[in-house]
Image (cartoon, rainbow, N blue to C red):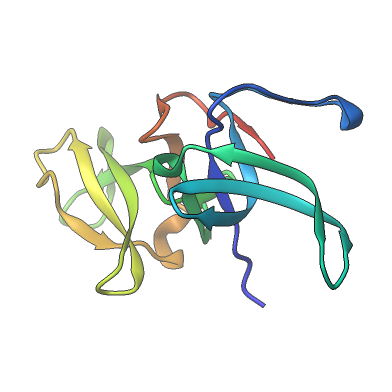
Length: 166
């Protein structure tokens, strides 16, 4: 079965003292998504299910605009790639003979997003040090994902590493 996983940023700091979990509003929470009208919740852990009741271990209301789905792919460091992530690829330039050049690199950053009309994940180029077309879109796929590195997301900005609570 495919792994459906989501993340979102809570409206406020959350304390689950009974399980010693403390989540800040600027830290993503991960789990299953429940949407009710304009409210979104990330939920985890079914404690009990009866004919009339579903009891969850953890449910956190998140800001709907920050919800992102797991793409099913990981970057070169094994970090999961989500909708809204900012990824970077560093490609070493080569000569016409196919030999790597000495210090010349192409560095581009991309935003990950889902394209509903094509029913697939895409990346959109945000920056490039080599004059490449900004806004250029291409498919997100497994073949080249091992060259990418998640460097942030559209909600928290770019950082050295993705801060998260999983």
